[in-house]
Length: 230
Image 1 (cartoon, rainbow, N blue to C red):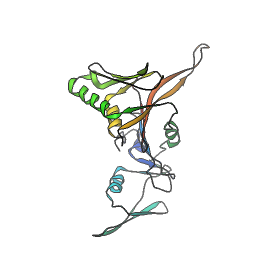
Image 2: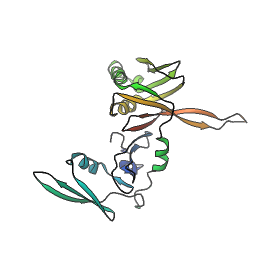
Image 3: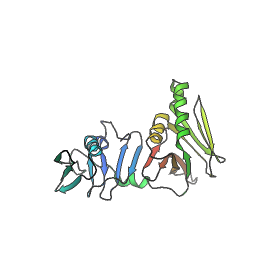
Image 4: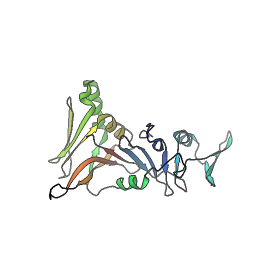
C-alpha cells in the first residue's frame, strides 16, 4: 500500500486494482511507481479502496468472501463473535472511475531474463546515512550506476558500491525517498533488479537506440517498477 496514489488528478490510482487471476496492482502514476503481487483473491476485476484493504488485513484466518452480482459478502467467524458484512467495490466501467490501464502496467512488470541480485540491508543503511549526513537537496537524488562488474550508488554526500555478477552497464537517477520505500517494503533480504528499457527512434536516418528509464525490483512474492528521474 506504500505505492498508492494520493493525486487528485488521477483518482483511479487511489485504489488497488485486483484481477480475476489473483493479480493485485497498487500504483502511483505520477511517481511512475507500481507494485504487483498474486494476492488478489477476487473472481473478477475491480478496484478496492484503502479502507477495505485495511479491513481485509485485520480479519481472522478462515473468513470467507462470496460475490453476489457486483457486491461481495464477507463472513467472519471467531470463537468470540460472528459478523457478516456486504461491500461494493468500484469498477472501471463506472462513469466516475476510469481505466487503471492494467494491461499496460502488467506488461512492464514482467521479469527480464538478465538481472542482478542485491542484498537489501546495506543499501537501506547507505540511504539512511545519506539522510543523516546531508539535510539539503543534495541527497534527494541517488545515481544507480551499474558497470565493470560493480554497482555504485552515489549522491553528492555519500556513496556505496558492491560487486555484482554481470557485464551489463546502465545508469538511472532515482528519487532517494522512492528508492528507500521500494527496498524497505520488500519481503526478503535480497532483491532481483533489472533495467527497464525504452527504444528511441533515431533522427536523420540514424539507428534507434535503447535508453534505461527505470528498474524493476522483485522477490518471490512482490514485484515493483520504479521510473528514474529526468
